[in-house]
Image: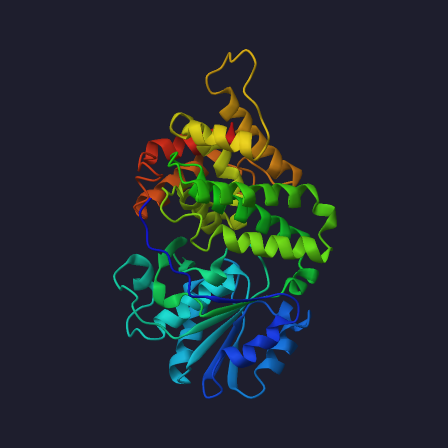
Amino acid sequence: MKFSYLNPTQIHFGQGQIAAIANSIAKDQKVLVIYGGGSIKHNGVYDQVKEALKEHQWLEFSGVEPNPTKETLDKAVQIAKEQQVDYVLAVGGGSVIDGSKYVVAAALYNGDGWDILTGQYQVNKALPLGAVLTLPATGSESNAGAVITKAETHDKLPFFAAAVQPQFAVMDPDVMKTLPERQLVNGLVDAFVHICEQYLTNPAGAMVQDGYAEALLKNLVTLANDFDQRDNDQWRANLMWTANQALNGLIGAGVTHDWATHMIGHELTALYGVDHGRSLAIIQPSLLRNQLDVKQAKLEQMGKNVFGLTESEDNSEANDLAERTIQEIEAFYHNLEVATQLTEHDSDKATAIDTIIQQLESHQMIALGEHQAITLKESREILELAVA
């Protein structure tokens, strides 16, 4: 293991913590509050934010959609520039926070903000950003990554920059009380795959990272099994904190990452509007089977340490334990009534696969996975297996 790790985001966790905003942003800072479709005005979050900012000068921008688009976010960028905003406060789930990361970076750039996503502009400065998390899933509230969609071309691309990492994040589990069941399910799935992308790679002897990843995975399995307890304060708090820990950089420090499931899944979302978490569940089992030889050791470790599986007595199949682990992963999704095959897209699956492959190629996603061994050929095989 060799790594440098820093997470500078201050977390305010627990009930009533939205009030902490008041002392987290200097009173002389002009604040732009960015949120989504307006649900925060019906669940009390907006009123709490308004109260916390009563001594600040602030304005707001609403309408950030799931899978935030450049087209919408550029309107917020224009406001930030014209109004000379000093600070951005994102109030929402991963989409709003990701979108706000784009805003704080693009607000200090004179060119086209999409240059950030294509790598033509390297972000080294940004407006300061704070976050009030309303939907646990992505961990975006305390990491430096974001994924943005360009609706015009159906492009969905990630960017990473230390400058856009939130300075603070408020995590009050009470805000989850009014979330639709589908969004809670998506959060469970998203967090689960985030962990797998950092864990189901190469055996590295990283006892802390592996052990912590396995603890988080077991948390999510338990929360899924206890989904009927989702109105319980403890259930909400555990999901919110687990999802944060899944992608705050700690379990991924010093170990190999994959992220191929995400890169392929992003195309399903951009092309067909599949919920992000559900796109991952469609792709991941087929990808694991396609890459079984290189992932066998970690799949077996996961089977034993997360799902409590044991070796087959007759050991008739060399990869039997790994395959049974994949079946357990599928069962985790099916228990939440999440599909693991291509279902939410155009009815012509062959054409859909061709289109996805074309998009992967245009985005240079032609060597994915921890070994860069998932070429367009393997991506096609994965998609075909997800249909079979």
